[in-house]
Image (cartoon, rainbow, N blue to C red; front, side):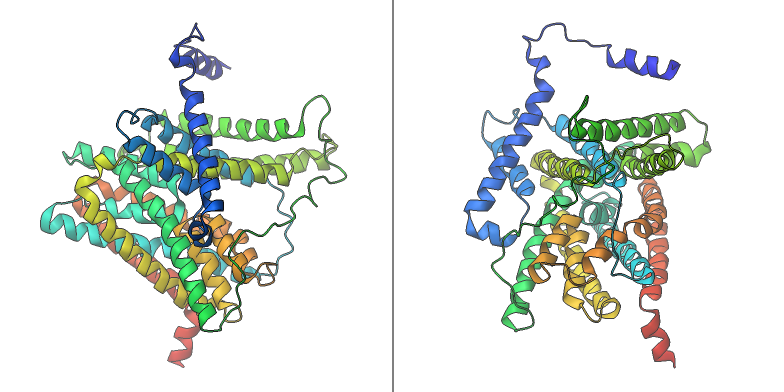
Length: 476
């Protein structure tokens, strides 16, 4: 209770007493700007055939429109960079909490081993992206000091994780570079990689689809969104009704915010502990960036407690609703993409354009090549479906992967869609140590070189597991 009172007092420290001031509208106006950008991006995507066929997300187009708005003289202050970064950060955490609270009732077409292998493929793709990015920026720093030596590690955060994690680690890297007297716009660099990743995932994915179609390998209908009926599971027999004393949607929002509040209490309590030099210099600065991971953890715990309460008859109704939680997570991720893209400042990136383009191009080539080889080995009966779903996810988001997959597997008849959903847990387990290593790299040039070696060893181990059958077959 004492902690709660302290937090409330801090929140009320600067109370606005008049609603007739611009400050009283500031945050709400930023959300309104995001909404306008998202609506405009959706209209643009629907009405421009090229954009519709490119499968570029409406949210990315909306963020790009806000970037253009910022470039107009006199309009640069319409979009507040700090507000957009904060919104991006929290939208990531809230979206993952909503996903974690869902009751995953999936009839899996995927074997347990395939799920583990797909999770390992996800983590190993982070590693090859990290190796390519870090290798490039170490060389650039060594020969010309044109970029912060550890900045290439933002490639797997932007491509593999998206704007939220790109912003989190970009901010951490900016702080570490500043302590060493190096000027590096970490947040803008990371967010730019994430935005380019969406374009790579969408455009390259569409080009690949067209190549397959011209070769006669697949048959693709006109590339447009297909309506999937998600209302069938909206209401089950034991769920609370849509509206009684409180609306069902309000319950979902409250559950998500309650779990996210627990995340804050947990991370804030760790910040007050004495964890030694490593904990203070490496672990503590990164913990706030793991809001999505702790959100997933506490969401799973909350879901387990609700299930336990039902079994012991402390609860008689089902309070979580998959359909509404999907809508909440979808909204959060759309907002995250718009806000993350709009937060980019090209003024701070002028000196880093060449390293940015080089890292992104090398990352796209390495990701395409590695996933193509792995898909042939892991998914012999659905190579193209497996490749497209993973490539879309590991350059954009899971939604990009699903969009590309629907173009050749609209009814999800192959296990590719299930692989994409079920691989999340093994990928998180394998990916968590990787992110801890990424927090060590920016402390010094030597630390980055050591990190590069460790990442290479981890990649060889994971790639060896994925291609183990092929390796042992050759030995025989």
